[in-house]
Length: 464
Image (cartoon, rainbow, N blue to C red):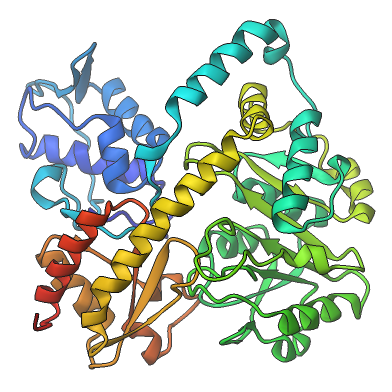
């Protein structure tokens, strides 16, 4: 089931319009039970709020009804006034059981079965019993002091980041923090980005009236010689694990990047360190910010990838000389993370639960990573493997002439979903780059990885 994320029509409206059309055409008959909002959100890979909005609109218009403890059901339409609509997303079916792939190599997946529910429940209960009314008052727009203090200590120990609590800003997701940064700097800035890249960041920068320059990459990441040829004032990079290519930027290139930032006033580097916790060869790579001696790196990280996507708690470390700008233009925006969630994360870190959880997840993902690479040995005759040293996904670049779209289609026919690299490019991908697919393994147990790999062998004509 595919939604058009690039469309000007909101995702919830696409879902609402399709279900409404299907009900009007008789595809969903009277009393038909719809998937739960949780199931549909997971299947479509959207937030549950998006599906809630679509269902709420259908309920308000009388197309479906909510039956307590049972779910959502299609209403009787006899005599209902209908407004015709010509809009219908392609390739969407509400009958998920028929078309949902058996195995999904989503690069955005995490292992939710390993979420520490008992610990999370106990910490939540204790906080609610202890704090009472304080939790429901507006807190510091920069985030709770104790959490910022704890995050500063964690970042110094784990990532080599030099930061005081005063420099840290807490927000609901990296996207919000990037939005806050744009608000601080104002419109009209020129930013440099790689391609392929994190497309949400690119769209956000462009939508806020900033110019974006695409800088060529090589095997070490963003080319600083090409960066110097642009008029960019800010460079957005992911040096510890470039998304989606998985490139780890070596120290020499990092020094060149820092030298570019220090060469002119007003230049900054945004370091997005979204999944640095997961590395399988050698020690974790220290953050670029830790090498910065000119206060030019803005460091952003998140707990969403290491704990769960719904834990929308991210953090930003601002250079000290930008704190005045933040207080002038950013401190008027209230913190977008509830005080309860902030206290939860603070205790989760402070009591050592986060470190134990990370060690557990590293072991689980390392096991899945190794199994997948073992299964992919048989694929070396048709493709090249890359990006396997860190993160929770790898890339397969076909060397036998197979195109990305063909590989995705053949895999889908065998009940396996893989993802194309071309969707991460800004503009058109080069022909060689259209031959690559992404396989994420975080949400697939080891045995399912083996079965899925066997299905891919069959799909892509690999002899056992």
